[in-house]
Amino acid sequence: MSKQQGPLDLGTLRGTIAVVTGAGNNGIGWGIAQHAAGLGMHVVVVDLHEALVRQAEARLRERFSDVEIMGFAADVTQPETLEACLLSIQTAWPDRRIGAVFANAGVIFNRTILKSTVEEWATTMNVNVLGVVNTIKAFVPTLRENDEPSVICTTASIGGLVRGDGGGAAYQASKHAVVALSESLSFELAARSPQVRVHVLCPCIVQSALGTTSAVNAGVARGDIDAAELAPQTLGGSGLAMQTERHAEQVFDHIAAGRFYMITDNVRPYVDHDYPFDGLGIVRERFENMMELQLDNSDAWATGSNGHPSAILKGPMWQELKRRAAASDSDASQ
Ligand SMILES: NC(=O)c1ccc[n+]([C@@H]2O[C@H](COP(=O)([O-])OP(=O)(O)OC[C@H]3O[C@@H](n4cnc5c(N)ncnc54)[C@H](O)[C@@H]3O)[C@@H](O)[C@H]2O)c1
Image 1 (spheres, rainbow, N blue to C red):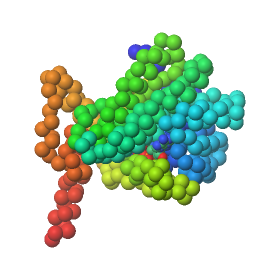
Image 2: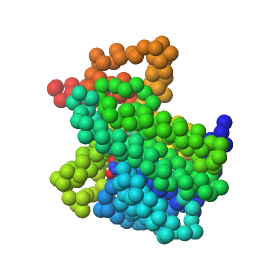
Image 3: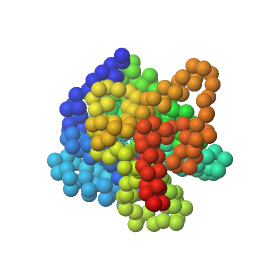
Image 4: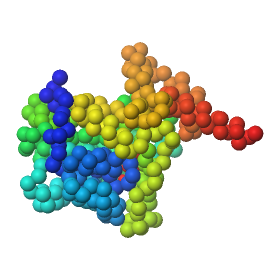
């Protein structure tokens, strides 16, 4: 095992700075930002729009008075905005070091290849892949300069580890790329900078408004929505999804354990039910297919609850959701 990957005493991060991109809404980044502040880290919330980061900054300050909070509006597709963010941090807090960077910003446009637009593909690749690369390039050189342990965590998805299926082709392709580039980063840093600990976060289902925030940001870019009026998006997702704060606990438990592939499944103690997503089981199916040199696309005949065939939305959690939907349909028809 590389020195990058042994257990980490999270106490060593206390008093350092956590930078979290895509933390301006109520999703995964917001949960990580809160958890980091709870661990005694000073937090920099990065998101696309000034209105969102100011609100996130204020909400965090209200909850955590013993750490410092900074909001910074940056577009992860624009490297210079991330460089400006680093400079702002170094100017505001010259005596503090960055202990963790979460390259978490992302978008989703859930459409088939044939129905999606090339613009949706370009935005997905720009934010989900190049945004992560830009964040790494902006912050990792600074992490390497310090001998103390630090964390660079990219956000991919369980969708980046399993077979592409019938719906979110651009999203899954981008997340496969994030997994591969994070593996590459681990190799690049392992020998010369093992104190910089590389992780790839592969969440299963966490409450968030990702589809909505992606549509809202696209609306702002088109000029249809006024960015000054934005407020954090309300949580969506099924009743079996993980709450963001409890998801963040699992993220930091994986970091403490030194796990590279941080698959955050919908399992106890992070949820209050016994219907896991079974991310690992679905990953295993893909590798079994590869061992046989054949893609099992038999699920293409089974339409999932989201209306398109899926090789992913099939574990105990989705079976239970389907059962509940059928029970409520039958109650409604009686
Ligand atoms: N929610 C889930 O179940 C789930 C599962 C797997 C992976 N993920 C991944 O988790 C990450 C966070 O998503 P979430 O579900 O918490 O939704 P979210 O909408 O709360 O987070 C995405 C954030 O990224 C920001 N963003 C988008 N484009 C940006 C840009 N160019 N520059 C800066 N910020 C930008 C958005 O404004 C938003 O705040 C994403 O990478 C997503 O793909 C989520």
